[in-house]
Each structure stands twice: as C-alpha cells, then as structure tokens.
Length: 230
Image 1 (cartoon, rainbow, N blue to C red):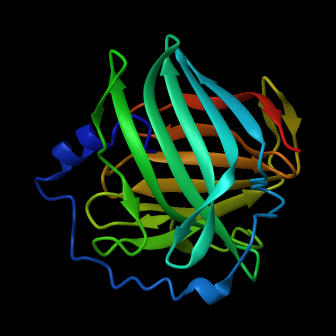
Image 2 (image 1 turned 90 degrees about the vertical axis):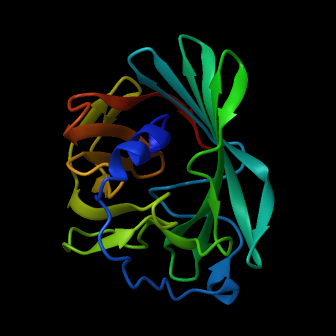
C-alpha cells in the first residue's frame, strides 16, 4: 500500500485513526535467520525482475546481489521503482530476510518520492532497530487461510501494514499469464482506515496481482506484465 500515498494518508489520519499502540513483539533475533530467500511464493533471488502496470503507472522490481546488514542479518535488497508516464515517481530499497522456518520477513525500507526528477520526500522510510521500528512478516512459511493476522511492518504511526492469508488456489489472470497455484492475502493499514487490498502470489513467480478491494481506489490494481526468476 505504500506507493506514493504514505504522506497524504498520514496527514489525513492525524485526527485520531490510531488507537493505543499494540503490544507487538516479533520475537526474532539475527540467530533466527538464514542466508538468501527460497520461499516458493516469494522467490527473491538475485537478478529476478518483475514489471507491473496500474493505469499510467509502471512498477519495476529488481532483486539486487548486494545485502544490507540489519541487526546482524544479511538482508536481501529489493529495488522497487515506480514510474508515472515514464517519469520516476518513487524509488525504494526494501530489505527482506528468511527465517529458519521459511517465513520471509520485512526489515525496512529506504524510500523516496520524486517530483520533476527530484527527491521531495522520504516519508515511510524505516529500519528494524531504528527509533523503535520492528520487523514484520512479508509472507508466512506455510501460508494457509487460518484467519490469523500479522504485522508486515511496524514503525508506529509511520508504517503499520497488516495482512492475513484468506485463500489458496485462486485462479488469477494477468497479462503475464494465468496462475492457479496461488496464495491470496488481504492487506490493510491503520494509516488508511477503510481501505483493503488483496495480494495474489503464484508459486515460483511471486506477486502477480495487487488489487484494491475496498475503499479509495477500489477496482484498481498492479498487474504483472513480465517477469524473470533465475
């Protein structure tokens, strides 16, 4: 949900959409993580690329070969760049790591929004261990629709996305193909009450579709148009 909207959403939310801060403890340390990411539904392998379209937006995602040390974890670096009418609008470096049980964790991001080719905001940036920020789960090890929700990121009042697995095996058609071995999650954030997204993951591919299912922007979504997973 982060693309381009974090600052606007937060301004609209300051009037009282945050309740008491949750007592959240992810319960992980550097010793819980392994090197690299091998999750079948989130194959973040160096050199992998994905291209998505959402109206006049183009989203390019690239898994870099470099890593970033975050709290002793060698995090995989994923670059996520958004173009509007072929002009850069947002450029983000996301940091992920996989634990020994197979879950993929989100450890933070360095994001910048652009206007006329110049960076104008870093709203939404956070890193595990900095200013109380904590990691969240990008995707569980064995995703099943069990009704359990989880934080995808936790930097209070800045980045608080949550998710739950709601389906498996849903048929998803996008420009890059038709997929049936899938996992579907529902995502939401306290920064934007009343808005929900569904994310659809395909085995061996990763995210193939993100669609807004409730609230502002309903009916729009990022559709996978091309990908390469080594």
